[in-house]
Amino acid sequence: MLVGVWKILPAGQEPALLQVDLPAPVLELDQASSYLPSGAYTTFRTYQGNKALDLHGHLRRLVNSANEIGIPMKVNQALIRQRIRQVIKLCGVKQDFLDLRFRLILDLENEPGVIFIVAEPFTPLPKEYYSTGVNTISCTLKRQQPTAKLTRFIEQASSLRVTLLPGVNEALMVDDQGCILEGLSSNFFAVKASELHTAGEKVLMGITRSLMIESARRLKIRIHLQPVLLTEMNEIDEAFITSSSRGILPVAKIDQQRIGSGDPGKITQQLEREFKTVIQEKLKII
Image 1 (tube, one colour):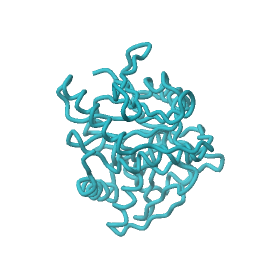
Image 2 (cartoon, rainbow, N blue to C red):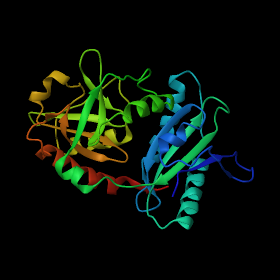
Image 3 (spheres, helix red, strand yellow):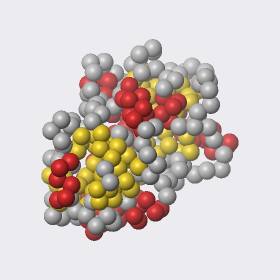
Image 4 (cartoon, rainbow, N blue to C red):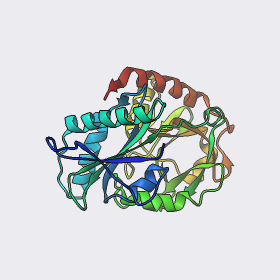
């Protein structure tokens, strides 16, 4: 299935969902996003066909991102949920797959307030990524407004992502002080002396990030909302990144330097197990 794009029309208009024809076939959400108006966005996946994690939080983030740049917005959450369910049904008729990866874009440019739904089949990462960890690199790319999730950053990130060497899963953004903040599409966590460290500001507060922090608190793991320095890699015992499509993904290397033993550590594995429990508890039908 190629990426599908729909425009949500106001309640009472027909058709309720207007399929958007892009200039060319696309296979990735980022590519599809480049053809749509600039705005705020959020990305999530479905579970068991018609369930999602904290969809309310995702929709609230659209509004918050718009507010952060001085464009007050409201969204009709009930209507958006209804239209997402329609897209799930449409995609399910055409293809025999279970889950989808969604991106919602709140237009802040052409028709402020209009919502676009972008959907593609969800493809899990290979299992060996979770058993061996992935390689990452550091970069100096910065978000202009870290607390707002805006599509204009997608183009910047995509330009860097296409330069990543094979085998590199993510680029980690490092600030002028050498602090590891977050990935291009993920949040970053480090484990030092069995305690968790992650940036508490100048980063996007990801939905998966918040659920991971809840998992850590359940396990009574101490959390420091302070980033680690790139120069402190020798002191890091474990590291991982989080996102809606990755879940908790262990990091084996940063810039070719091995993290700890190079294998997913005990704390990371404990958090992965607890996170799966949290997911099952918090999944809700869309």
